[in-house]
Length: 280
Image 1 (tube, rainbow, N blue to C red):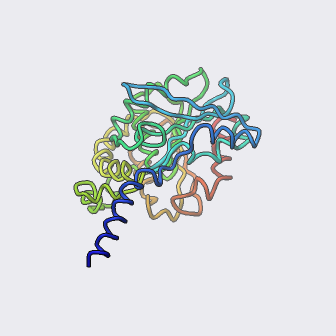
Image 2 (cartoon, rainbow, N blue to C red):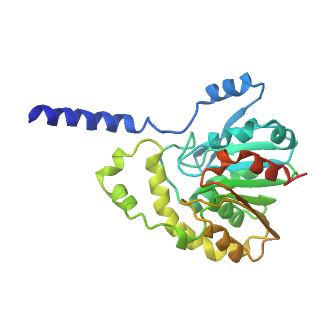
Image 3 (cartoon, rainbow, N blue to C red):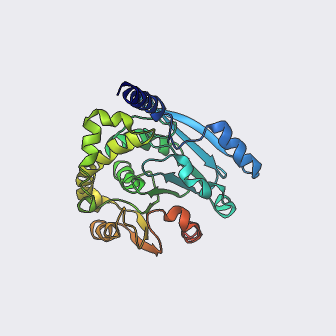
């Protein structure tokens, strides 16, 4: 009996040691720059600080162009939007910036914040990229409510908002009680890499959306919803909820696509065309 127990103990300890280095969903700057360079694309990388917290980002496209700022879901990092940053049509039209949200990538990896606290860190940093040209915030999944939070906290920041598979309806959130069990027990330490802060912020999200939803009527920007018709992770009812709540949005457009939650990658072309149309 001692041998199997010892073996199990070794496996568990090894997993605990490896857990934080696995599934980090991030690429070192030097490696990313070299990969883009092979395709003849200049990738700029940088880190800016807000309240002592690092916020890491990458950029393609000229500083003189209108801006698309991409905000990833959970877990994830800037390279969730790599296919967009590489696209020649988009690069000719926009400066594109993709940021590691707080807790992910190289932005203080491993620590989780709620939406309001993330906004306090990201808003002042993103404002530094304003260049007297249109600036659109583009968020996927949890990045959807993130762009709404940013707009409500910093209404002078963006020209408009794009929510791709955005999770914004508090009533559509699954209870997922098992997340709290993971969070409050030693099982938390078995979550690998970015899944640990992801689990925590998804617990926060249940409350975050309840706080955010009464404020949505104050959004006074054009809003574009892009959503998969068969998205089972973030159901289409989120779009219906947004349309009802965003009563002061200057314009609301929708693009329904075949597919589920991963349409940023499975339906690149129609999304690319819609992004190009934001600033003809």
